[in-house]
Amino acid sequence: MSATTPFKVFSGTNSRYLAEKICKSLGCELGNMNITHFADGEFAVSYEESIRGQYVFLVQSTFPNSDNLMELLLMIDAAKRASAKSIIAVIPYFGWARQDRKDKPRVSIGAKLVADLLSVAGIDRLITMDLHADQIQGFFDIPVDHLYASTIFAPYIQSLNLENLVIATPDVGGSKRASTYAKFLDVPLVLCHKTREKANVVASMQIIGDVKDKNVILIDDMVDTAGTITKAADIMKEAGARSVRAIASHCVMSGPASERVQNSELEEIVFTDSIPYSLRCAKVKQLSIADMFAETIHRVMTNESISSQYLI
Image (cartoon, rainbow, N blue to C red):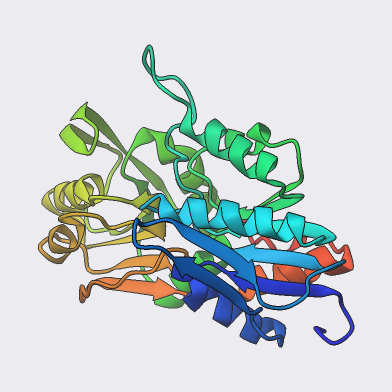
């Protein structure tokens, strides 16, 4: 494909592991790019091969720290100035997505700001996965291909062959996502209602539904400090659940998250590899999204339907 189609794939520093797998699936070489770091922390981006008239796919998740976002912006600007025909940002994990609205006075809407930065920098298209809020797509005035990790997770859940399966969500905000899984698998849905004292601190949680003697799978879009999802697992075990597993798209896993997961009642927690996970926790498993993104890139280049590859 790469020999006959005018496109190239490049990667930022911290998403190179994923970009290499995407290129392997596409049967092409990862583009040659140099990122020079200066003593004061500033860095500069340069393409070491011609991209004039090319479709350029830039793979970079914008997880903390903010260098990942800044690196992507410089990659976009350099590609625009190098006369790339089209610049497509491939952002498996779209950072700042939790700031999608004003939930109290005098706060920023970070997701809109990031969308504006990417647009002004010069992207022509965005490919991302499991946005924290679907409406973030509307912050862009360019095509957005919003992929779903359910394409990876649904077959995995089916492969477990669990009896008395129940799909659950650790908070009411994720009920739509969990309900989609429950309908696809034809199993009951259980909700958890939580209240927070402040960000990343859960005050209380109640189960809405029956989990006694059930095998429960918690569904979420991301796990940050793992406070919510481990508390939900522990409460469900106390309520008589036979087993509790968790599935989440993005492995943020900051601070005490790994220790909390290891010490919780969770049997396992399964993520995609949208974010690199360097810590080691025996209960954490990552499934690759490289083939799904490679297929999407192929469909973009051949003008085929993107949505037809979704399972749910």
